[in-house]
Image 1: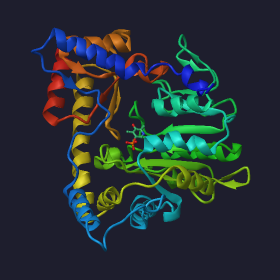
Image 2 (image 1 turned 90 degrees about the vertical axis):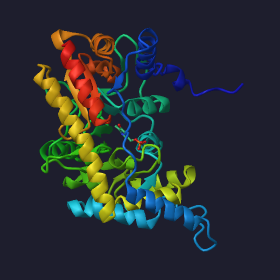
Image 3 (image 1 turned 90 degrees about the horizontal axis):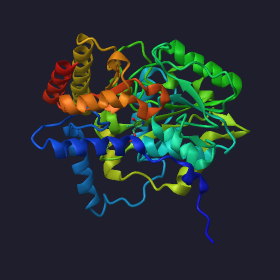
Length: 405
Ligand SMILES: *Cc1c(COP(=O)(O)O)cnc(C)c1O
């Protein structure tokens, strides 16, 4: 009799987004004339940059010719893209990263989940609370998380690092021994960023203990404060203890196009093995690369025109974030995030629960948000608002929220 991976049985249902959808549908059925505004989305809405579109068109035409046709590409990605990334995302910021340390992929979500393949099942994993659920669920699937407690909302073998107002949404270094540390800055969902000093403390901690930091910087393009690092590799020592995940999804509107990359430095070794070699082995065995046309589109993000166009789109979302943040703060809510991030993290008024405030905004303002409790117990008492909507909708949503507070 075939046995399933029993770890899948332990996973709780993907409660957050199904429950939001259920409540939104129920509201829509009762209020067919009310126009809902969605500030819950974690997806971009602005079209691809013209430079990306023309590069992709040209690549499609190439594929239709005898000379230009390409079959399987390198599993790690084409050199033209790996070189552009090394130059613009790393060397230009003083981070020593070579093209052969960059692995192009179809998403940071896949990479964050797949990276576990190269690590033993008995490593102790540390995650932030609240957290992007992918880090937790993929470790649970691999058998690293132990048992889930519905009552506590936590897995028995994971080390949770609370990110709260008290610590400025910056997790403290774990007190117990951990081996793999997931960090995400700018953070989803809190919108918090990490300073150079904070990241240095993490790198020193990981280096001295032989731990590995798994650094997700999917939102680095939203950093506006020049003192905030965009990459963990801007930090001294990180080449010996960190892996970084990046994506064109939020940076350049590629959520439907699928292109991302993971950086595994050559200096990173554990158990006498090079993690760059292991990841290369994993990718060449289980992955066959990102489409040529998509990689040409991603390369165009680094052209002069592409960079200017992408900047403008990021600026559009950053402006939405300012509108949300200023509008809610002006109405007396305690808000954070939204300055170097597309997410604003707002404290519910009068100690209201996340879901109660979500319902109030849905029922009375017709605005969809995301309850913070859905990202972990420390998210209780907060909601997440996203800057990925339209400018008019965002302004109207903020006005509607202000009117019901
Ligand atoms: C959106 C997001 C990503 C990007 O995922 P892709 O698979 O590249 O689209 C990665 N990490 C976090 C925390 C995200 O919110």
